[in-house]
Image (cartoon, rainbow, N blue to C red; front, side, top):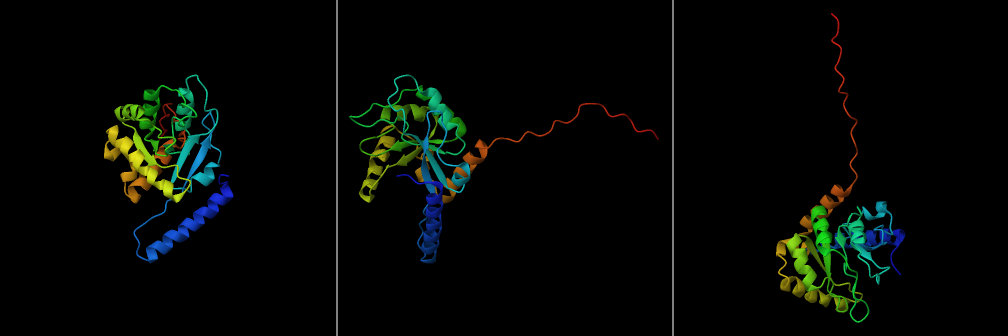
Amino acid sequence: MGLDETRLAEQGQEIVALNKQLRQRGIDFTILRSAEINLSPEGAGDMRPTALRKLDLVLGCFHSALRRKEDQTSRYLAGLRNPDIQILGHPQTRVWNRREGLKADWSAVFAEAARLDKAVEIDGYVDRQDLRISLLKVARKEGVRISLGTDAHHPEQLGFMELGLAAAALAKIPAERIINFMSVNQLKSWAQSVRASSEPKVARPARSSRARTPAKV
């Protein structure tokens, strides 16, 4: 069962308390507040934006309609344009021996992610290994940021990070394009920048172009 907004807020309070304890002990380690939200085929998230804005990072992932055969480029573009996410998680949605994953114009998808300065994930979970190396080479060409994750459900599965790192190395992804190599402050600054650029711009009232009548003296 996933988190709802109430449990997410409770978790956030626990993380704040833990980070405070770590600082008091002189331990240089920071726990980030983050969440993986579900994206509908239309790119809509399943949690309120007001709850997500309190987080450091938000991943958006597709978990439904994953066996469609037709081109899904529009779905990916809609998901990337969701203003609440900074990372598109396990993009292909493939699982070994279960499903091949969705099809799309990946050059267009990665180009849009690069334009929005958002990241796409390498999910190192053994059954996923998503993105595959051939697509990572396309991602490298388009200049998109990469996020390394494990999709871990148990502590021992955090070791899957090595598979994601190996895939990035084989695809020759530059280290500066991998957000995991950022400092905490750099990562937060990037996420805030992406979030700010995704916010709708408020139109300013147009100035009148009518010439003013000279005042009489």
